[in-house]
Image (cartoon, rainbow, N blue to C red; front, side, top):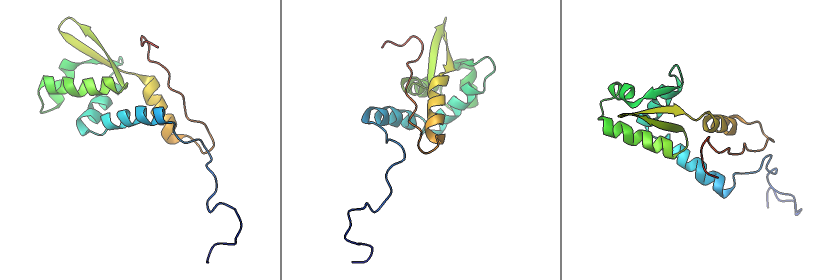
Length: 128
């Protein structure tokens, strides 16, 4: 048969890096699912580009044709994915990017062949 020489050699070269472990894949799937919505992508971009590193939900809402509770729901999903953190101050909630997660995503997507996957570091204040 064409392409077979009777040897035991694999038809393709071996992997250069280890594939994702199941836990890594589940974590990253949640992150990418959170990023799979245009509103959440815009929110993350707005938070990341804010001088001072944090932004009040009251400053995010006017940029969208959505209610404040809807914006808060999108922010909650970003927070649950580990992309942002929040702090309540009086009646308002302030959001900030978690750079460890975005750095990890960037490293995963841009790592050269042969380099190991970046390990997850726990966000500040997270229980281990």
